[in-house]
Image (cartoon, rainbow, N blue to C red; front, side):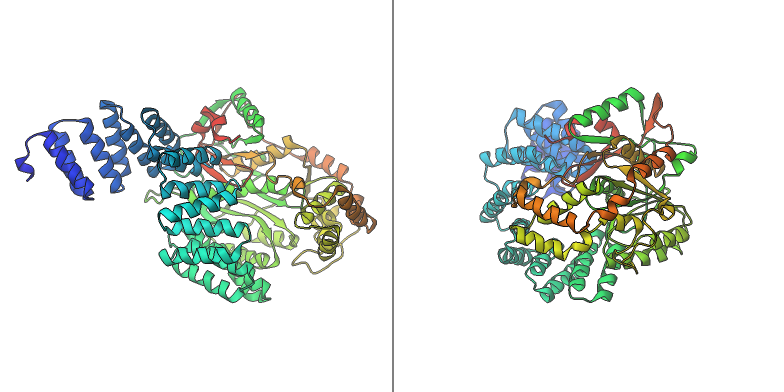
Length: 630
């Protein structure tokens, strides 16, 4: 039939028919023949949509751009936005611009929905919510209700999320909407309803997410065996390309086995979690994910300006300097252990340094191009005796590794850590630098009490919780620093006299209010490890004081009771002033921030809710405030 059609318009019409009937490959062939006769806006636009329908995103982007060059159309801008979004996360800003251009020409519901999806992927949830609302006002589509539901979940508006997921399901029963509904109901502890929603999701599609959500809902209903069955099913259907799926499921199984008292299976499940998830402690990765040749040169005053802009939004910019030659002062920061004492700023210190490696693992390109990968050991917060046993197995595995560990970061929390350090140093053949952040013991205790009181309705509830958790509250700083009375330790008594600091002389002590020194430590670790720059909230572990049910009088009464029992006596015997002073005197930082310097080509954005993503440094420094939700 094609040979009978002589004009481009005839071919374009035939191609459109094929596209509308779902024959995208046929449409592509005919649109290209039409373009060969005449480069027409309609043919390029149609070709773009047909290519989009066959997941040929790069070719679709080219077709839509050629279409727009001939005529600015809202449809072509809309298609360009979707193609850019689906091609690469690094093209999200350009995709957003394309959707805005489309909306400026015609306020289409699909363009608003696309805009909402991209904004949500960038964790710009308030803006995404506005976009989805605009989309729904033009057309009540199940996809827009679904996207709005997820954006609302991520802004802690679970009531509204439930309502929108249900509206989405009325229009179309989709597995992801049922999954979102189950998740939102679980957040509200409505586990029986959540279980029904997860079952409905699974009946439409047997997806790992739904089985995982079902497992946790059953676990919270104390239906342990049914929960185990659901998690095991999740393991069986987990996406082989998404290694994080099975890892998280094994983590859930470890929690259940621990609750049942099966310590051996709990430790084994935790080890399998390490081996199968994105949180695998020891892994080979390219810290530049292919961006080796695109370092960013900046003047000193430009970096200071970026840091100042971040400060205005309550963020810290931690530059990672690219160093070509060995720097012994910098190399000393490659192997860092952060002793995470509760309520001493641990989350703000630990999370970004762990998450930057997690995100790099997620974004490693599946490319056949050979690049030199480095061995990183990075666990983040290492807590619990079963995690400790599993981590010991990981360390044992390292002894057979053929490649030297390039960088180490882990944060022991509530576990015995001295012997672990010795074993790790022996296996990796490195010297670990141990650091902790500290604060006034009484202030720390009060903050810890408020954390415990979060789920208490009365003073009596809090007193009961304190009694159950007395070992965690009683002279907590002393126990963590001198490494006794923690999970995995053999003694409940300090190994030496409180005034004998020989055992802790290797620990660096920094006050949590010393933001300048903490920033230098983080920047030194990132630079020494060739990791991306980091932008984080200045305080990630936000206060919950406003959510307390107890009165100030009741809180003060329980606090005074703890003080009378000596809960800070040993903590206050530690001369933190002297220890912090000695630390500052011996700390050495490389003079990296010179008049002109080179930054890592990638930057991780981390927000107060723990969400994070990586983007090119050039995109971030061109307009830093664009990446902050207000």
